[in-house]
Structure formats: C-alpha cells, structure tokens
Amino acid sequence: MTWAAREVFEPELREKYQLDKFLPPEFLEWAAKVGITGEVAKNYWASHWVLPSLTAIQELWRKKILTK
Image (cartoon, rainbow, N blue to C red; front, side, top):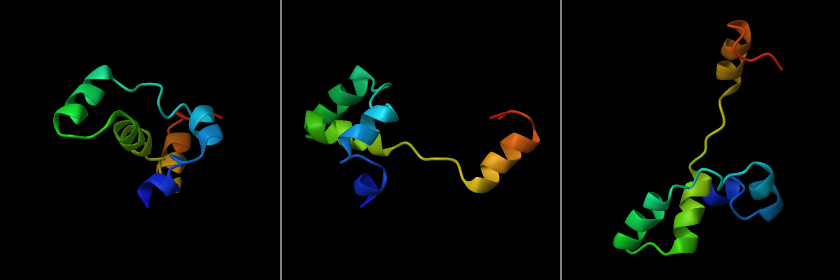
C-alpha cells in the first residue's frame, strides 16, 4: 500500500521527484545481506520519502524558511 501511495509504481513521477537520487550503495549492500533483492530494495528506498504536512508547510512559511 505504501509503495502505491508514494509513486513507487509511477516511473514518470518517480523520475520527476527523483525518489532514487540519494540511494546510498550501502543501503543496497545491507538489503542484500538480509535477502532483499536490488529492485525491491530500491522500491523500499523510493517509498521512504514522506511529504511534510500542511501544518509543517505553514510553519515553514511563517518562519520565512519556505518562500515559494
């Protein structure tokens, strides 16, 4: 469920939001050690990103940390 909700199965959105950009090689190495294949490990990584809540965005805006 989480994978579907976080664009893991949407190649265009996965690329647009660069969900795999910061995938560390060590993550794949350790995933393999516990039996998680490369593709599945990449999907876990892509799904770990969590967007900030509306309240968090409003707070960033109020503190002038977020300007756009």
